[in-house]
Length: 416
Image (cartoon, rainbow, N blue to C red; front, side):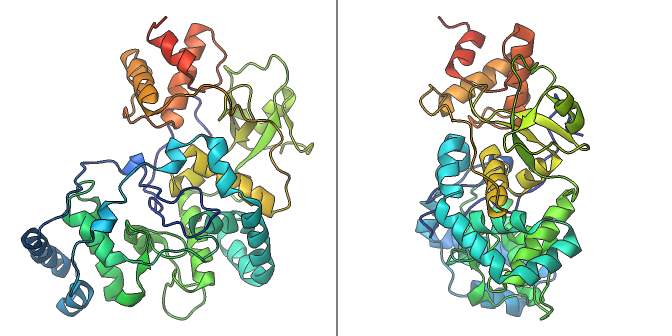
């Protein structure tokens, strides 16, 4: 069930950083999610500092089962890459309005390419779906958003990228641990060092798994003895499916549905069974009937005047891959389009005033002072902020759409 006033448990995500070689990519320089936020470094380490870092790393790598031969082959000649540290900026799926993000993520060209890949890989996709229970359109959508169906998995050497970030102490020990995981992958022989490439921040291959996620969830679906998310489409797609299954994908549910809310719909009761929503007059936008079983909650990513959705627990599973609401909505909608579904029908409030990062931080801090918000004041909208806004709106007798606006912030902070 989706708890109406509780933040869903988060799981580590494999996808935090991506290169964008495709014009359909949502943004050319997306960043790690706030779920990974820790201490920030960022200065290019000196040659002596980098050498000291590598020497200390060797001790931990060998203790963890990485041979000296593997370690030396991976790190020989590696030096800090200033271009990697220069990429540390904001993340598009958190910083841009959802309607702008969707323009790139669910572009007509991507839909056409995805349908072509579905036709070419029909037998493989059917086998993966049968084994893991994740629908082929969902696998294709994630594959498309992450690497444009394998065309832009990234060309940055993973070891160099991770070593640069780890030595610079960017986000504390996160990238040091990922570097040790990458070395463990090389020790197991799944990929040669020269072929281990990905984004500027270590997300690898066609599925953009971080090394720790690869170790835990990647699979060898084509049976060649290697888990290859770089060149094997079968392994890449099956690894996505295995990961979603491990996160709790429910084969009996969709991710969600665009819906029409009836006039006067009571938004204070926004989490229920799908059958209960149907009895209250909620209808799918495409005219089809809502399923008779399964739980869902109302999601209004543009406020009460924009598109309305009923999202299920599978929406949260997609957020396990990337914690952004915009990302999960884009993947879900792209999956629907790849499966022959229609475009979204309701207009977005693209001309309305919206909160910037500083405004969202002020709102988070104000809600925290009221005892309604317990998350980080990071200026990023997500489920915790959405639920806190709803609590405030319900308390104040406002329309409980969960949408953060400048007017709501000003009311909370008692600004004229």
